[in-house]
View 1 (cartoon, one colour):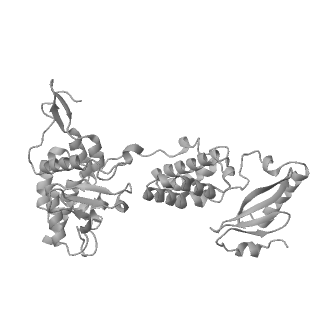
View 2: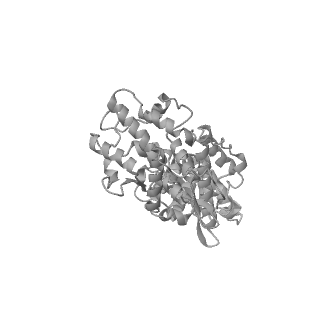
Length: 417
């Protein structure tokens, strides 16, 4: 008995895929994820084959039967309907979603779990709604561009490029598996909206830092207690080079050995931008702030907000900089660039004849900033890599902020190596 519209519409997913037969080899395949795909079983040259027509309800019953009729006409002429499409396709007629799932599972074990989750979430949010149920060998460049344009409209130009990159990788996987013959993203680069020029976070010249610190020490807002917490949070951000979110959500249990010689802040992977645990060696000055907050804060957060069980609000620190007169001149995130500039400018004299070399290796600076690694080898380093030299660098930075003498390489430079 032919399949009815009501049966097709009301078919519910089960633990395993199942078929709803129509007639003459046509059936609706109901997937565990709820996807409903039209398939036609037929024989050609003595071999049983499977033809794909598309997804229901985008392709209705009448349209699917028309496709079956056309396929039967080709068979009557001695032609294979699959080959007649003139494309390399899977006999299973895989959708983009199905191939993307296999692609992701194939590479997932080599990825950081948090990164793998971000990649798949991006596909679910931006790519699958447009392309997920399309047969992969039928997707065209204009279709992919239309999907990208929807992301660009939101102003998310970086995400649009990542989405294009993800689609391209799925197609490369599909081509290698014989599921597609070409990559529709190959010529899209020139059609994407250009990124705006990078605007670096505002930061002060290093020679204005002492004046800034003087103003910070005198900062007042609503009550002495709130003022002290804000002052300590801003200074702690400057001393540790961390991002605002990493600092705001810091809890007491993340701090280790605060009374010892090697205090450290262990930030969990879930809160880090790159999705991996980050160790922050604490200078004596930073450890002093941490010790004070651990002993005085009533809740779990190192820097509590107006309610002890909630963290400092997102705008507290930046508004403090505004009140101090640094609007458009300095941001909390800009502290990272300020510190990086200082670290990369420090040189020491070495050898005979004398030459000037970097005091702090660039890898120490990048590791302290928790930037993404430039290659897989460096990306495999554990969170504690370079902890000893980073600790020395961070203490030098704290001493510099305190006005103690740290080598100024802009004077008496001979030659850099």
